[in-house]
Amino acid sequence: MALALALQASAFAALLAADRWLAVAAGRVTFARRGVPPARPDGLGALVAGTQAPTVSLGWGLVLLGGALAVVPSRPWQGVVAVLLAAAGVGWLSRHTTRRFGGLVGDVLGAASETATTVFLVLRALG
Image 1 (tube, rainbow, N blue to C red):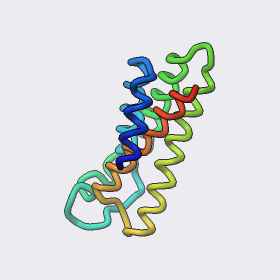
Image 2: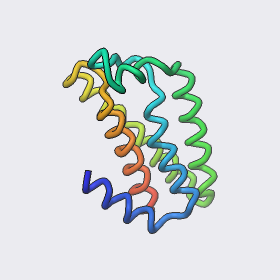
Image 3: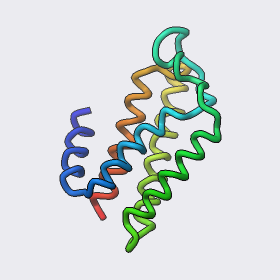
């Protein structure tokens, strides 16, 4: 967690406000997913698991891709790659923790959000 915060702080300093908003949005889109069961019947995982239709995730993903294209018009591929790699990181984390815990827990939602935000910020700052 300390590494994620350090990377985020460094990247935030190097980026424009639009990049910052997209990074935060990328982290929050991770909450909109279906097909991952809750690990326990109580807790945040049970409240969130299965609440969003697949079209919601797809729609927010398209909004993020459109925003990423608009932020860097001279290098549109860079924002798109950042969004796609952030989504891939969250997908991997979700599969891994679902196998490990048997489903979704609130801490995994937080970790997924921070993973997506950090990946997006770092990739945009490197460009």
